[in-house]
Length: 110
Length: 119
Image 1 (cartoon, chains in turn yellow, cyan):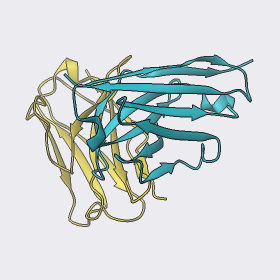
Image 2 (cartoon, rainbow over the protein chains, first blue to last red):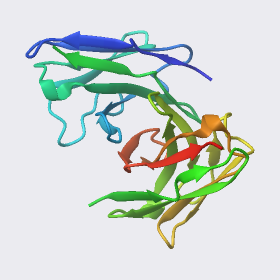
Image 3 (tube, rainbow over the protein chains, first blue to last red):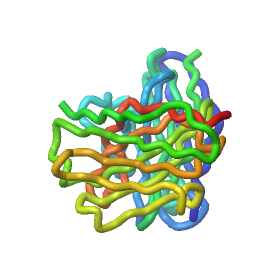
């Protein structure tokens, strides 16, 4: 199986932009997409970005996703930071038989 | 409105068994793969098991293989996770998660149910 590595924490000021990275240890996001989830304290995760860069309806366009040219690293970009964005963010990918989650990144909005 | 309501959690002794159920509504249940994902207290997310829309494909994480069994009843719009030989490390919030068949994406998560394995 592969692993997904995220930074433990990131921070930013209101109105600024932060980027959360997610690196796949083996295999490629070209074959198996990456998805991003937001989890606020005490709540279940919700889908934020799916299939690398697609936003579900209702998710603000301040949230965007991308894959690098090697297709082994993904990024979640949050622009125009708001205090309500303070949460845990998880990347997730898969193969034919399993899902794998990154360890999660805690976003602090200072 | 899509709803996934899990039940059956609680406190169980190590070595014991527990059955989790997830009742689905608000969508065509028989067209979706269903997953269980767990989260130990203060920890990250861990995928546990999945069952495809017609139960043709069933997968488990290595950590639960041989101890947990997933099943579904499309007539009753429900998915079940039978958990045997429970260990302290199985203590977690268990989430029932919907997945469009073979998309690899959990597009809707239920609120979760807590399982505590302790003597």
